[in-house]
Amino acid sequence: MCGIIAYTGSRQAAPILLAGLRDLEYRGYDSAGVALLPESGGEPAVAKRRGKIAELDAAIGAEPLPPARTGIGHTRWATHGAPSDANAHPHTGSGNDVVIVHNGIVENYAALRAELSERGHAFESETDTETIAHLLEEALDSGNDLLAAMRETCARLAGSQAIVALTSREPGVAVGARIGHAGAVVVGYGEGEMLLSSDLAALLPHTRDVAFLADRQLVRIDERGATYETLDGSAAAEVEPRTVSLDPASADKGAYDTYMLKEIMEQPAALADTFGGLMTVEPARLTLDDLGEARPWLERVERVLLVGMGTSLHAAMVGRWYFEQIARLPADTDNASEFRYREPVLGPETLVVSVSQSGETVDVLEAMNVARASGAPQITICNTPGSQTTRVADGAVHTYAGLERGVASSKTFTTSIAALFALALETARVRGRISDDELARHVRDLAAMPEIVGRQLESFDGIAKAADRFRTTQHILFLGRGPALPIALEGALKMKELSYVHAEGYAAGEMKHGPIALIDPTFPTVALAGQHALRSKIVSNIEQIRARDGEVLAIVTEGDDELIALANEALTVPPVPALLEPLAAIVPLQVLAYATADARGCDIDQPRNLAKTVTVE
Ligand code: G6P
Image 1 (tube, rainbow, N blue to C red):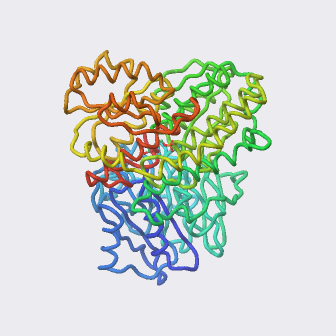
Image 2 (image 1 turned 30 degrees about the vertical axis):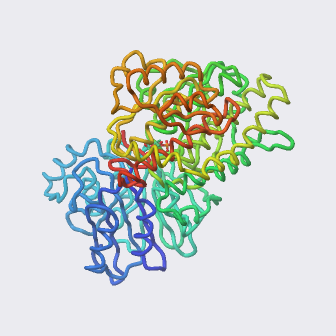
Image 3 (image 1 turned 45 degrees about the vertical axis):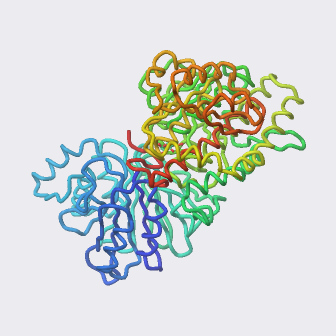
């Protein structure tokens, strides 16, 4: 959570920082701020405002900042201290010549604050972050340079942190640090300029040559380049910039009103690119080239455990189905935040597959640490090359969805499912569970999906009508069975995060054990009733709801006239093979949630209280 950007080089820093903050706004939008080291020297100039970047823009318009070629910026998702101008980052120490931005939680901040207050430091905010600025100031006062002062400061902090700092004592320099899983610090290598950011997205307009800080690493940048150290003061090993192939144009909204709509519409291309990255049709071949040290384990393991959070957890639930159905391996899913605290019983016999589009979600990373400590081999399904899950895992299956900017995930859900399908196929292949012909059929089936999803996205007519019905509704039940259960859960998640309508995803078989008590004419149900989603059982559920005057919107296979007649409304999906039905079934639910949110006037790209990447527990 929280977005960080830093620039040093020959250009004016302020416009670069402000553009970067707009690219980072999905990380949090409670407040925003920048700090610049003026070209004329002297203390950093700070501007910060509660609210979105537009408020900060207006403040800077009214009171312009001095020319500067070095600066930092921050967009906040509040943890300690309410959103306010005073609590907005950047924060300074008592003497105003040190300025920092921060992502994470200083867990011992109360003790540090008391200690610093006793030594005469005056605090201006309620944040945990401000203690870092004061500690850094003391470390500089005792003769350290900024890099050494940061190292000394980090040693005092409990919890996970990502920090970037400037001081007027070292013009043209910025220092960054990463401890634990509070979020990435990505170093961008430009021509005569260097950048730091919490996200690739903010760096891509300037460079594709980037390096990710590892846990407990520090970096010092000036316009000539970067030097790296570890927290114990030794030079950091293996920090080489890599060139990422992501297209900066994918960071634009293009002709769409929102990133979310653009990303929903990009799914055919994202699926085609992911397919192309992981397999070929002629000859039918899997090309999972990044499995690394995990590859031999595919043959040896006795079970698979898939972990993730949010939308990625729902993709993992579809993946479980694939491992069982295709590879015939026992498979289970777990919410990463529950898994890590349960003292799970596992070892080298269990392949742990983490799913995370960002590769930086703290609970997923902590779960991976637990898995590693248990000796379990690990593979991550990830959309961000170089991110932390790809470093911790023994191997990776990359998705090629491009940047995803909408806080609610869409194209990374469908591409994660495609990647899990590929991994299950590879596992089945090396274990001798599928023949060449079966493999070729599955590959052809997946190859057909981009075009099928593209056709689904051509017309939204029925969906607009359903959304209009849901505009005024308070609650919606989403029911699914088998592979449609994760789709019911994901459909409900999309609905609540985008439109703020209370939506419950439920296993249809559970309906009679509670939720049916809620059914009345004001409580509609969305029933996933595709041809492979245990249709006959869902038909009974729909009958039971209708018998109680409940309204049903059914998601059915094209031509299923019986169900179309039975439900109050129906949205159709094209007939596709059973294993790939989740890919088709989610599309109308994404659009339905989008259209409902639009009809209710919600902020679709930045739903209240949410952030794209969750790096605090
Ligand atoms: C946040 C986002 C979700 C996302 C989840 C997991 O809650 O709002 O859209 O599914 O994090 O993120 P990850 O990057 O691990 O897939």
